[in-house]
Length: 262
Image (cartoon, rainbow, N blue to C red; front, side, top):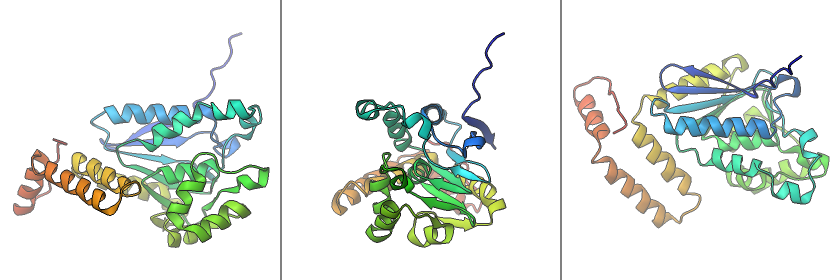
């Protein structure tokens, strides 16, 4: 009797011609992120990067959980050396370097690695019932996929310290006030609103969107003058693009622009 194939951790679908939807698919474990989960996400994003028809990607979970953390059963098997050499670090790096817009639709729990995945997204939309946190301290450890670094840059020192050191969750409305999510909507509307926003972004110039994302992310790494120089270079590059010519022509002719990404 042949063994049954292991179910996929990520379900992949298209929403319209230009939006890719990745749905976390471990509902029995509240979408806990194991190495296979991250490998599948990183692999799908690598394919999306080379596919010109994909202009934005949405990651979601289900009604109960976006992702309720890392898979503790997998973590407990690794000692210090194995943890330091864990391949999941490469997967997180690949996710963080995805150059196209990445959006997160967050319902239910986004905890630990789930909160870190949320912060890897460029835009997060949360349902009103979402609960977000970095509770690793409760099991005798600390965030290991950017939680201490991205959270403090996003919400500031006081709230980040509270979340990481106490393990307490925050509600969606507090996450909105802190800048951790961009919008809060009714739980039933979370995925629909996120897909609609991704569709709106996908209708813009892919080249301009990519350069704008790069410039904004680099603002965390560069000083103001260097950041402004990068912005100006990107702005100048668009002057030679067919997309800018199309955008201006469409505006003058009072019609919708059709961008090619060139």
